[in-house]
Length: 227
Image (cartoon, rainbow, N blue to C red; front, top):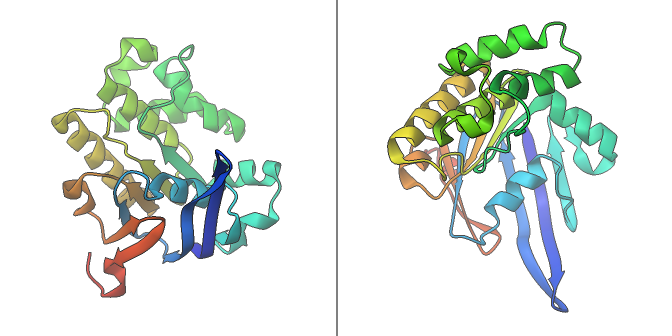
């Protein structure tokens, strides 16, 4: 499903080059649940952005479902993300002027779904927020906003779910609820799930744990069949 080969990501700041990812090679098969862990600044979020085609590597290749992302222009990348990827962020990123129902319907409308609001209502029910359909983000709790964001990410039954610290802004109980929903959708849709987290308890739920440090993979439980 995902193949990164000798990926390097460097940025220039203050006249000096900073290496974010350093000769990183990683393969993730279809339907696997992978947790990516490591200290702040180790390159975890950059790795997710690479997989989604949001960042372009300085060197190396990134392929998704056999397609080399480096060969696609911005329109093609946007189309690929709409078709195959659901992204859940720590900060929710809901549109403040749209209701919960309308936020979920956005990717469906972009994909010209024949019944975007009908599908959005189904998803709201899946995340137990049917009664909140007409509420705006400011009227929802943090946990409710993240459940709406998760429903939006799964609106088109994506082949790939990318989650960047999805419970980072939530209390433990609410975070556990959101994580249970994320795992259920991963299972029900047969999606590949890549989770970035600082939480060892969440990482332990994964099939495989990849640890980054200094932009390199320093351990990978998949190499020994653990997880």
